[in-house]
Image (cartoon, rainbow, N blue to C red; front, side, top):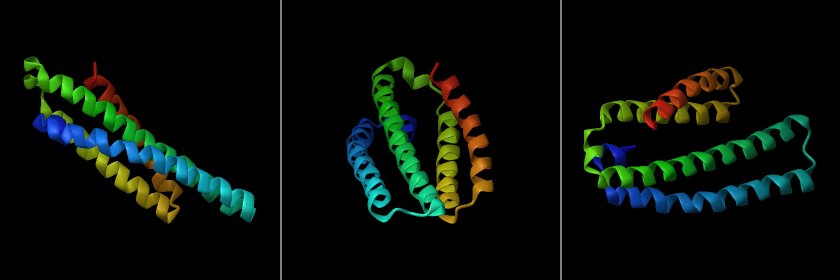
Length: 136
């Protein structure tokens, strides 16, 4: 979001470049989860944690994909003079909200706090709606 706020093409390139290792990490962690299941035969509660970890890393990787897409859009917008009239205050606010939600979601996961996680899902729907409205 910062790259779009400043129309910073160097930062755009950095976001795109840093997304690639996330894909490899997701594959590695998912394989590790599979190995834990196969070799350790976890109990039901442990199995749920392993599966939740696998889903969480997939979602984090997907967030990286979305950051990469946003960076590519930012490059196109920054090169277009009409893009300079975009209201970056709304973008900045949405970015701050999304970052705060991500931090809270990771904290809720680490604490295994299901109630906070459910609240975060509802808040995330609001962020998604704002993002869709902006990208039209």
